[in-house]
Image (cartoon, rainbow, N blue to C red; front, side):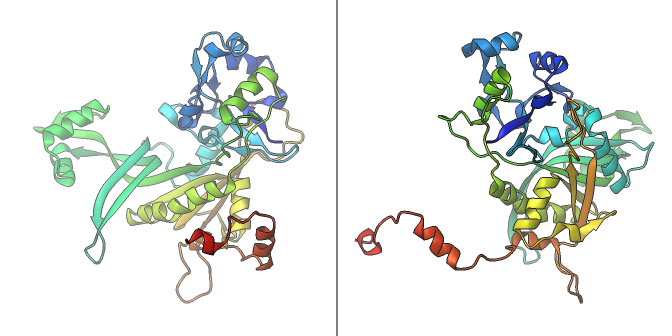
Length: 370
């Protein structure tokens, strides 16, 4: 049965006084801030007022987010990360020492120079209409997890011409969002306007199955039971196909966008998810092991060997970069990342007969069509 592996950043099987003190503040060591449930679990928020046992453990809070970082489906197997903050977070500009290796690797691959100033934005949304080569209008509607860019000094008049926004609006918006506005040479300037180099970072973690309310395997219930009973709880499973579907729908698009901007997108995924992609699609990631960025880039991140590691908070140190072209290169037989949308291998036809044998039919078609 699935169990919570990490709760509010701490291993449940290595729970100690430090973890207990952290629990009282429901603090996330990977955000260096109070846990927000990964930013997408608000329906799983826990009302402490209705549970005296929980309230006793967390006396200074009334409502908390479910702090489930990872799940271990079977004992002695690698856990699956289910919270994006656990894998990578620059939330509110806070930096976690437990993700320093990942930040260093991203800097190296993106060729960000030490000593230069780069700015970071999170949850950057673009919704616009654009025309393609046939002058057909297409809608682009995507949100980028993180954008890293350089900065440059730029006249507000030039920014206005570039963005087709009145200068007064540029100045007002820039001041509101903390940019440095300077008046020099009879003109207003933005001294830290975003500029190349540009890097997009996407964080893809595993999704949980819906869980069973009666068995208390829903994510909020599992969190409650783990707080009160430790390892004596049940947790939801992993929805492998949903993870793959979410990723495949965006992987190529966001990579193409970055290329059109003269930049790169780097996808951060856990190693067990990378293994699942290789096993379930025609894309075999180990064939793309690399040290430089290409058209599509996946940075695989892992816990490493847990057998002798008894630390209560684990730093993710093992990384591998898989990169390559979107599609097959011209003139050769090399594959491309477009193979992620292709089936790894079709099952033999006998499998459908077997599946039908073990499932009750709905009825006869002729009856259904009456």
